[in-house]
Length: 99
Image 1: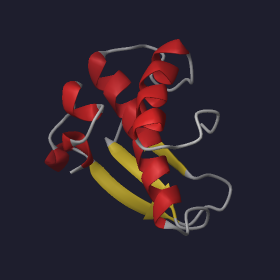
Image 2: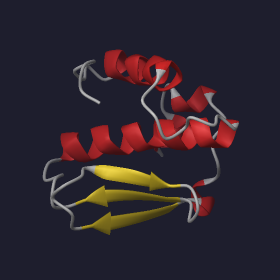
Image 3: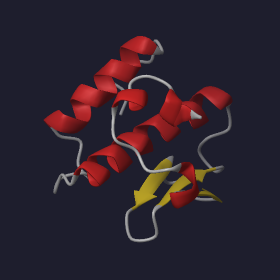
Image 4: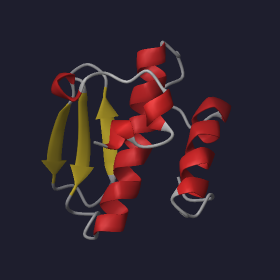
């Protein structure tokens, strides 16, 4: 569903059946994207509210989008990542400084 929402609806994204979503219990992280297993992990140890879950999902989807695009630095928070993150931060009224 999130792939049909801006800004991801304009990016090349894999079909949802190709990406596995995993809930983990690691209070040290909010989430992560595993490119080997094509998984997005969301931590129930750090994400207790819908807003935090949604922000974390969108964050990891940026990493996924950059990976699908073939960017070598998909796992970084560089200029390419920040451009996409800034779009969804403005659209959904999230703190643009929060990564």
